[in-house]
Length: 481
Ligand code: HEM
Image (cartoon, rainbow, N blue to C red):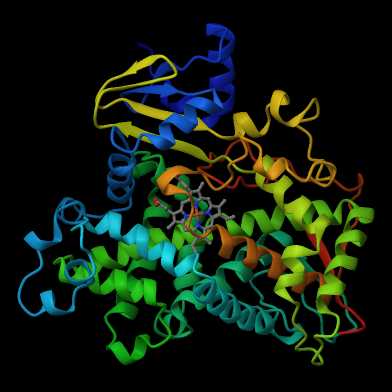
């Protein structure tokens, strides 16, 4: 059978649509990706079957491959899938959550999923994270704190217009604030270049994710190693220096230590999670702001909604929005968020068969991979109408049930349904709201008129997609703040 790996990495939708035209139906069909028989799903019902069948279809082999690609050693990969009672010995048994709060003796990776859910979805824990994030955002978006990382021409006073790279502004601000939320400022103090190395790594992280040969991803590997070294240095500090480290990471670090995982592998493991936290959010924020700047009437509608969320909450320049109003009374903001997540998200459902089963009438053998790229559903005319490929947030205003449509799954589903989905929505809403409240934003004029960036087809993506071009923005302080 022909190998389709590169065609799949470059443009999975095209490959799938070609397959669809070739086979002429919505039935699953198989191709070869990375040397493995890979069954492609095109029917939403088949995806639901995959999500339900947790006995026969597992994400674990894929997790092992991904962590391995990111440099985590085989002994560690075995430990996180082994009964913890066989590994944790001595004093550690008294302290370990894996031993003492694990009645079904789940393996590390399964219990870690529960920790994420309790930290990221429980209302009180989520509120605490949101509050910390907002405090960092407040500081980061003050006029005097704008960073040279994204400022292209410096403003000398509040009245002066500053030119910023929208792409870098979103990337730096969102990643800085969310990384500080989970790790505290101590990480930047101990490893001042961490964020810079992380962002260099992130640029080429798709090469590591898709396991391109090392010589094709030298810079990404080097940046990753430097970021991991910084993290390892931070994590090796005495416990009192980690007082701002969020509970989820304290637990991950301690429990991996009890399992006998070495410091460098623990740091690499934490780095992969930082990547899951950061890699998508700033790109989504970029697409939202870029579209708003290219659509003045829509921008005004969003600004009105956001201003209402600040009303009565002003405390001089420290004004903060009401999260409740942002989440429940900003329909235009909601609509552009949903539309961005629909159009710019290359998420896939991915599982491997650990037991024979049947999906959509097709026999699945042990070792087969099943993949359903979601953008094929998100851009499907049968689901989202004749203009499904166009960016038109109004569709979510016209039909308020659209986010619950089968086939709309920007955060995946099943037992790997993104546990960070509520935090992600809050961090992006807060970032957009604080930015538009603080600053007048306009496009730097271009000789041939404005151009809304398109998706960068040269850079494959496992989730939020990158733009083919930056947007240069004129930034000025808004008068009322
Ligand atoms: C707009 C931003 C985000 C998008 C589009 C996104 C998307 C996704 C998707 C599609 C998955 C499921 C992958 C699968 O089914 O295999 C996932 C998993 C995950 N996400 Fe997110 N995510 C975002 C933000 C976040 C944030 C902010 C966090 C943490 C604070 C986070 C933590 C995770 C974790 C830990 C998993 C793994 C879940 C598991 O394997 O059980 N994500 N994300």
